[in-house]
Length: 97
Image 1 (cartoon, rainbow, N blue to C red):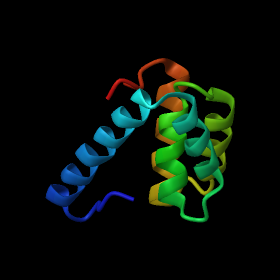
Image 2: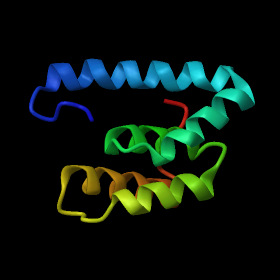
Image 3: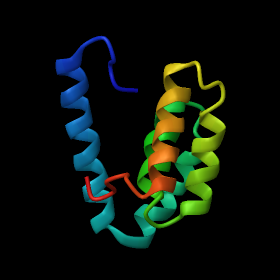
Image 4: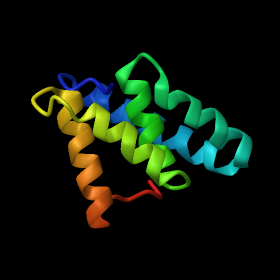
């Protein structure tokens, strides 16, 4: 999970996450299958980033993972997952980032 208390660190981590997602997009079906395996990872942050990246090629599985993460919505992860899911459903989530 990005460091919400340290904006510089969070920005650096976000840029790194975006770069990793772009690299995975170039690697095809094998990378996509590996990413789908991360939707059941025990760490919430891993599931969140995997689900966000998987929205592009496996929307049903990704939506289910984000929906599960969005409860409870009062947690930082829950809020992030709920907002991502809402943006996805509204067509405002920039997947090319």
